Amino acid sequence: MATMLNTSDGLREVTTSSMMTTEDYYNYYEGGIDAEPCDYGKHASHFLPVLYSLFFVVGFLGNMLVLWMILRGPQMKKTTDVSLLNLVITDLLLIFSLPFLAHYARDTWVFGGAMCTLVLSVYYIGFYAGIFFIVLMSIDRFLAIVHTGFALRIQSKTKNGILACVVIWILAIAASFPELLYLGVEHYDNKTICSAYPKDNRHNNVRSVAFFKMNVLGMLIPLTIVGYCYSMVLWRLHMLRNSKKLAIRLVVVVMVVFFCCWIPYNIAAFLKALELLEILPPDCELSKRTQLMLQATEAIAYSHCCLNPFLYVFMGKKFRRHLMKLLHQTPCIQE
Image (cartoon, rainbow, N blue to C red):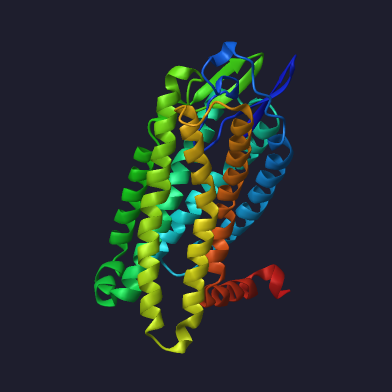
């Protein structure tokens, strides 16, 4: 996300990426705050509030419908059911932070230090938990299709699914450090900034490590696991009858959307880490392009929480049948 600092010498943009908070961009190069600032314009204040508001509406409605379906459906007995419930909860956590981030992208932070800590804590934990639950569901589908016998023994027990989800939440909290240690507000030029790191050059290495950590834990490892699981699933389904072609298409869609949503942001985050470490040349134009790329790709990554209901539930025949059944049982529709 981005907040715009209106100074007497013009508008200078300070980006605090809600996934991985970056530095104040007036010290993007060696020379720090005393050097001439780089004017970042106000592009983010135009498109981020609109996109985040749209994601909030679509994501809230879609995930609440899925949650309603799960709670009204049969008792959860398998790992897939428990994982799906937790994935919906994870998406809702991210979605509930969007109104705050939408306002912050347009203006200064006005919600106080406690809300800053709460919103960013929810964001970081929800970010990692969402990816980890996608990995868990990929492993679950891999076992169900490729190793059916083993899957039947472990997936039929509800306690196994609950235990797996508890482990995922613990891992998500652990992956959110050290960001959770630094959350808070700072004041600059009569403006309030909500960030995950103190904005000084001493913490550049810490922020760079955080970006690289996100690349590894939030991208490389998950995509390696997801890619392997779904490639095995595709190979297995390819060996089956033509009636399984729809399932193959669904798996391909899941893989493509996951990659498309997260790879661009991780590339931008990697470039930003190189800039913080001064591996990239201290060039204002290059820094502005990296900045804009970071903001745009973060919005793309955020859209994934809106797409999950459609990818994991709405495209399933069983869900559509169950949805129609519940809708016909609803009094207002019956009338």
